Image (tube, rainbow, N blue to C red; front, side, top):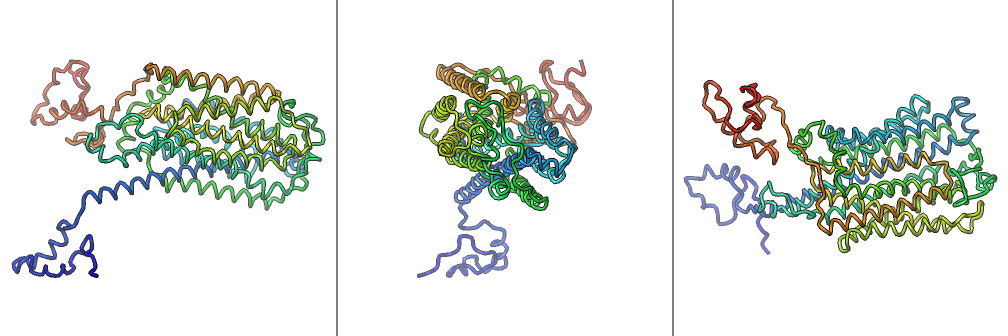
Length: 599
C-alpha cells in the first residue's frame, strides 16, 4: 500500500515520483526558491480557517476554566483563613497566652467592620478601576489583595490586620464584578468563533443577533458557579485536617446553651468562651498559613498566566475613551432602566441568603445544637450540593429563563418556613441528619439563584459597553445586603427569618412583574453610552486606515479624509458643516479646535 503524500511538502525536498521534469531544464536552478517562497500546492484555506477558530474556541474554554479555578481558590482561602482565625481568637485562653492584653477582640471587630463596611463605597470606584486596568488586570489585582490579606496573618497586629481588611473590602466588588463581566464576554467571543462564517457574510460592523450567545452563557455560568461553590467545601480543609483536633466536644462548648434555631438570639448565645482543648503550636499554624498563602499565589498565577484578555486592544481604548466622568456617572444613570429596578430585591436577597447559610443556618441551627466540631461538615454539604446543582442552570437551554430563578426561590421559601417553626435541642445528635439535608437543599437553591441571576444579566445586557456597569450594580447590592446582615447580627433568629422571607417574596414578585413587562413589549430606558473621544498622540490617528477607529468614529471618517487630502500650503478654513462639527484628527494635530476657533 503506497503512503499518502504529505499535506505540506518540505521546502527543498525531492519532488514526487514522475515530477522530475515538470519545471523544465531552464527552471532547474529556480526550483528550490519556488518551493521555499511559493504557495503550497495542497493548501486548503477553509481547513486552515477551521483549525484557527477551533484553537480560538479552546482558548476561550481555557480562559473560563482558569478564571473559575482562580476564583474558587481565592474565595476558599479567604473563607478558610477567616473561619480558622475567628475560632482561634474567640478562645479566651488562646488570647491570653498568645497575645496578652493586646485587645484581640477589638481588632477582630474592626477587621470585620473593614470587610463589611468598605464595599458600601464600591459603586463610586469599581467601574473606573475596571475601565482603567482592564477586566483581566482588575481580576489579577483583586486576587493579589486577597493574597495580601492572607499574608498579614503571619504577624497579627492592629496595623497589619485592619488595613489589610479594609483593602480586602475595597477589592470585593471589583473582583466579582470583573469576574461576571469576564465570563459573559467569553460566551460572546465563543459565539463569534463558532459562527465566524456568518460574521464574514454580515460584515465586521454588524452585531450578532440579540440573545445569540445565550446558550454559551448558560454553559459558562454553570461551569463558573460549579467551581465557585466548591470554595465553601475547600475552605473547610484547614478545619477538618488541623483545627478539629484541638476542639472540645459539644458537651463542653454547649454546656450553657439553652435554646437554638428559631428560639435563639444573636449568634451562639451562651456558647463557652473556651473551645480549644489544647493550644496549637505556632509552628503548625505557620505551616497551615503557608499552605494557604501558596494556594493564594497559585490563584494569582492562574489569572495572570492562563486568563486571556476580555477585549481587543482597540476595544479597551474605546471603553476608556468615553470619559472618566461619564464612566463614574453611568452606573447611577442605569437606575432609569426598569429591569434593574425590578431586579434590585433579588440582588439584595442574593446577599442575604449566602450569609444566612454561613451564619444563621450553620451557626444558629448547626453549631448551636451539634457542636463546633461539625461546622465544617455542614458547610461541606452546602458547598458540594450547590456545586452539583449549578448544572441545573443548563435547564434554561430548554425551559423559560424564569424557571431556575423561580424554582430556587420556591425551594428557599419552603426551607425558610420550615426553619421558622423548628428549634433543635442543644447537645442532641438524633436530628443531625435534618441539618445536613437542610444545608444541602439550601445549597441547591443558592446555586439556582446565583446561576440564574448572572445568566439573566448577561442576556438582558449584552452590549459590551455596559456589562461592567451592570455587574458592578449587582455585586454592590449584594455587598449592601451583607452589610445589613452585619448590622443585624444581634437580632433574634425569628426576626432574621422574617426579613429573609419578606425579601424573598418581594424579589420573586418584582422579577415576575419585570418579565411580564418585557412580554408586553415595554421598552426599557437605557442611558446612552457616549462616543469614544480619542486623544491624538503623535501621528497615530493621522493614518488613512485607522485601526483604532470605533464604530461611531467611522461616521466622521469622510470629513477627516478630505482634510488629510488637502494640498500643501496655507491651512484652508473649516468646512461649512455647521458649528456642531467636531474637529478631525488632522485639525487637532495642527493645533486648531475646529470651526469654533476661527469664528
